[in-house]
Amino acid sequence: MMHKLITHGTITLIGLSCILLTGCPGNPFAIDPPPEESKFFLEEFFNSTSADIELVLLGDTITIESNDSIAHSEFATTTLMDNKIILDDWFTGYSETQNNSISLLMDGQLKKNWKGIMESQGLMINSPFNYDSWIITSWNPDANNVVGKITFTITDDDLN
Image (cartoon, rainbow, N blue to C red):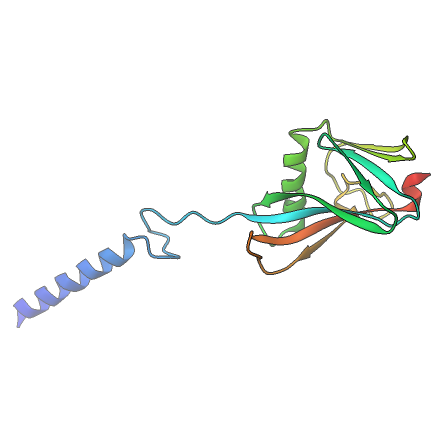
């Protein structure tokens, strides 16, 4: 009887060890857990004015017609739950290539040059470097793991 208990106990322990030490999904003790897939957000600029405008960012000049939007690029994010971190992920990738500057032109003339660091500046200040100026929309991942978009709106006040 004792021999059977030892045999069954040994088999149970070996079985548990195999479960704990293999790469089972969601297993915190896995030796080689699968890498987490990157999630991406689109960066979108919406022109709510009645004028055609140009934005100069990331070495590109993009034209946005009146009352239209353009998805400029996509970026990887480390979270889907915290809007501040999503925007920090955008800003980190952006600030590595630009001097924290985005220029707004209308008819070839500079109307606004936004500069700075990403911070909360309140709802009254419209700036791509203001957390409060972005709208974040999320959805289920598509085939390219795009899970949402961040949208910055250019307003008539930005042209004055």
